[in-house]
Structure formats: C-alpha cells, structure tokens
Image (cartoon, rainbow, N blue to C red; front, side, top):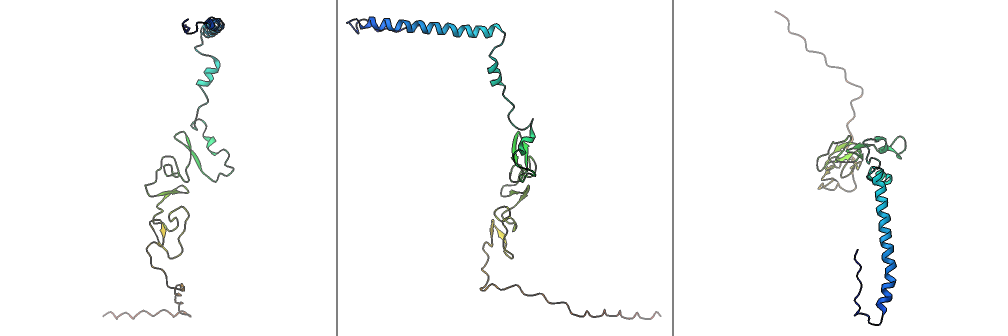
Length: 185
C-alpha cells in the first residue's frame, strides 16, 4: 500500500507534520481491516466451501418459469378460468388470444389473421369478427379490409325492409295423375 504525502515544500510552517500525524491512524485502520477480510476468506477456504451458504442460495435460486410448475399459469384466475392459459416454452401464455399460440402451444395464425377464442380467424373478411374479435357487421353488410360495409353504396332513405316472401298456395293442390302407359302390342 502506498500513501501519498505532500512534500515539505508545500506547507513550510509545520502543518505537514500535523497532517501526517492525523493520517497515520487512518492508515493503520485500513491495514487492520484488510487483514480481517483475509481471515474471513481463509475460514471459508478451510471448510472446503468455495463460497458462503448465502451465496450458494443466491447462485441457485428457485427455478424460473412454468415447466416444473404448470399449474401456476391458472392461479388467481378463479374457477372456471375465463382465460385459457398454458405453459408454452416455459412462459404462461393466454392461448385464447395469442397469435403465436392460438388454441394450443405453437399454433401460429397467418399474418393478417387474429386469434379469437382459440381459433385463427381472418378478421379482414369475416362478418362475425370484422376488424376485431366478436365485432359483428349489421345484417346485409359485408366485411372488407376489416371494415363493415366498405365501398358499398348507402341504402336508400328511408331504409326499406326487404320484400316479403310469397306465401305457399293454400290449400295445397292435389298431385297431378301420371300419364297412362301406352298399350303393349
């Protein structure tokens, strides 16, 4: 250990001696503390342990993830769980809405599709899931590009009801008789 002391030419009036006397006990404390640290390390080396028991616990904590404990994925969701969660690649995943794990682990939905209740659905053209899951288009309106009624003309005002279907004839007519067979001859 090297201790830098200012030269005597800095303070000619004797203050350097006072500073030296004040710094000497500090140097002794540093040396004593350093010896105690070496003794603690030597004690661990004597027991054959490369580290302390606390350090062993800190280096080997509880296993992270859900592979060893898959039940933790559904904890706190209530019974029956409204969201279906599974352990996929050591992570809890909501398989009812995740596009990379739709319905089960590893089932990926194609790019424009979305995972709705565990099924891959094309929300660009589906009138029951137009743009989002469970976004229904009104009756008679189609879904294009995820929008209900995209590029369709507006219906005339006031919006008419569809025409009524014709009623079947009442009472039903009797069936027609078959034509007579020609005589064999």
